[in-house]
Image (cartoon, rainbow, N blue to C red; front, side, top):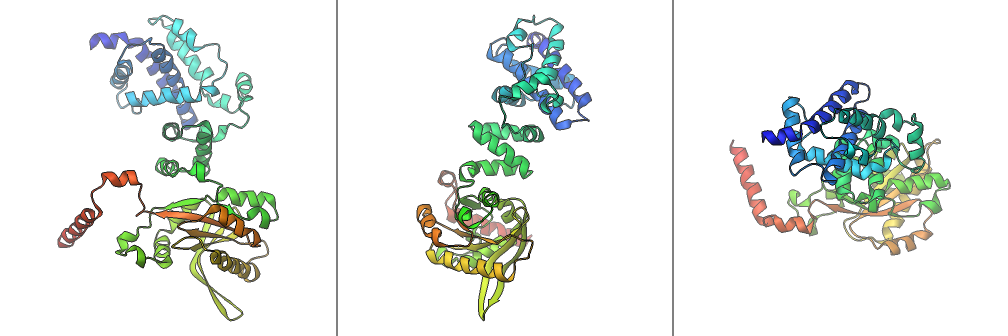
Length: 405
């Protein structure tokens, strides 16, 4: 073991020096400095492991020695260092045209003190140094000219854990860019980000059947509304099994009741800017009663958004009902500074081609999306769970025990 430690002493010194230097600058730009550090370390580890410059078990040995020499150090386990390597390798297209290349690093003798200086150069000049990423480095600006649409601000705003989540769970460049922007825009936690990727938000975003382009005069507003909604939602806080009801007993009121008790989750499902106005909102028009299931106001769209909940498959009558609600809201409830209201039908199933065909004759801005609830779990997950009856029995026994306590 002692021989292994001595073998990687130089590598430990290099990484330790980079950590200490980075920490002295961290107060000014904590997140960017951390990304720069991890990118630089990832570059260094990549250069020495991919070309077999280090032996087997090197990363584990280096990580262990770092913890000994820097007591209390966190975030430099072997797994974390491999994540740094992945971070560099997946985003090395961002690297500036530094004079210190990977091949040149390999030429430096392992016992040379120059390694530390060269690694400092990598961390300061080649990696994601804050000043360079803000466009103050002429060389780096040339590199970024090849990536005109790269979301630089969003890239720098996300934590390393967010980046690791995106890199490990989203496989294509386009998906990663999408989730990077989405996570920054909605200030998502890592858990929320993982959930969005699991729901495959990238492939569902902007796919909802709608007539916004035909009914919203301002095309910018129309596209903004299109981008806001997706074609399927997971309302995983709705579990009709917990209410003790069988499928045939469940109606829209049950679903609505669950949403009201989880209104924050519902709003987060649909994105930022929504303000809750009420449920079963009553409007009287010419002596006829109308009850809107869920009513919101969206600040980004500057318009009322209503949701109609349907337990079964899509029906043409749902559009007619929603259209009448929107007409009444537009005539009786809309303020002078507000845009026309829009409506969304949430149903269990919908034939998109049919919905879009029928929707052509409606003049109110509407969309149709589907939803799933917690009782509709992934079939693969259901395979590894005990039978539902066993789970229910355990749940009931647990409740009895809690009541006795």
